[in-house]
Length: 197
Image (cartoon, rainbow, N blue to C red; front, side):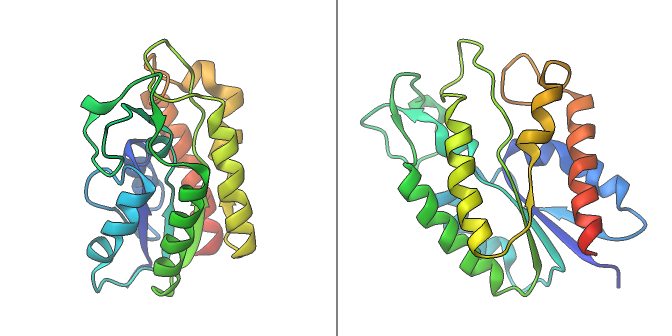
């Protein structure tokens, strides 16, 4: 039975997963959680269902962009509706909440026995329509870095890898990537997974 790889994350990971599957086709079975993993509290709540009784050899995971979303002050931060987005609103997830959610997620994932790899949140570029503040990615990545280091979880620094290539790889929406961008990220992810297979 070839190794089983599980990728957890938002639409960025959905974009690069097919490339990972292609690059590792002769070495592993690559799958992604159902749909978009959105924000960390949603992932924390959904992980038991997503994992089920399946066995995985490697889990590559990330949460971040949805945690950075700014929402209307009256919005429920656990409700994923984009209708609540507001550029000048309040954070969906504070750094303290983000840290707590990541700790809970790690506890769940460690129980699977899989080798874990954390992916940093990719860069954003404000095009005037983003409902999050691009510079905050660095802060949330630093929160995650501290936690992953404490748990001895390898970090796939997609932020640093994508940043020098951003003009070429980022789509006009300032968040998602072009087809070339997803191929580039997919190669970065496949390379890190291959190291632990």
